[in-house]
Image (cartoon, rainbow, N blue to C red; front, side, top):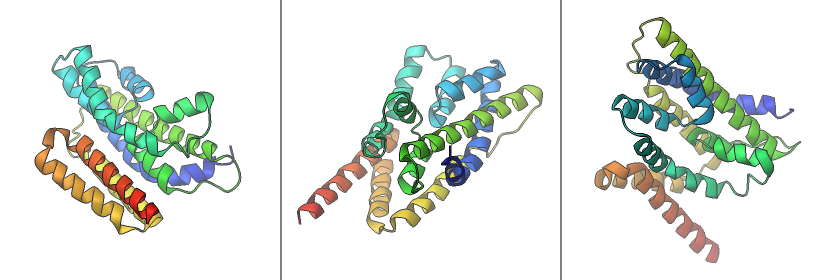
Length: 224
């Protein structure tokens, strides 16, 4: 696949975040006493970093399957907004499109909306390669962490900061691609408002407010 080298270069920031973060999850998951390969299966079949970390806490509290399912659905509801904005890019069909939908994480969304596909070839192949590479980084991290956690005692304190650092890198990539202040001001303002007034639903509220403001601006600027 000729788009693979370009996709690999674009996904390098995600690799440096996903591998250590996945290892942190694998170590925490292993502390629950489950076989190491279940962490790998979660990376393959669930593939949701925040939801997987949340699952560790729920499993440790002996939560039921319904509670875990509802919590995961609420946490990942933000992906509905991501998916709506990707309709023009994900124009392929069949199993490829289903995998692109499944693998649309925060970091993959950031790359897909900021990176430019190679001129030659089908853009959907480029997005597919980025998605597959990002998931492979996550699965490798989950597996290494689970194996390490089962073999030696490991202090994972501070490893969760890898996700924050990764988002900062992706923020810079978005700025380099967009070069428009307004979306970043909207995101920061809505995030602050949601954090102050809607702490328990901060992420969902901030994304909803941001989407409404950006749609309104797009609509009225287009009509002007």
